[in-house]
Image 1 (cartoon, helix red, strand yellow):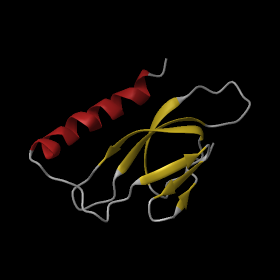
Image 2: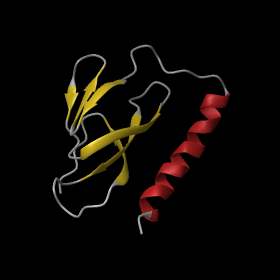
Image 3: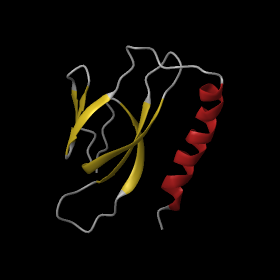
Image 4: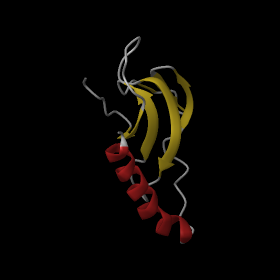
Length: 98
């Protein structure tokens, strides 16, 4: 079962709640996802990121005050295989090596 991958995501969401409750917002220069092209994430500033996943969907962005946000992504590590989709928490530039 894929529960071990979900627990860190839930914990991160809970930990980010106090910052949101205090009204802290991300700076305007914060990284944001403009679109996803299967295995490539394109940011609003035009940079492209290939985290090593396929069939990517953006689930949530964990904003870190004054830091680089974490992106919660749903995806699979291979094409045309029996791999299971899972949740991955990554920062821009990180790459999963299968």
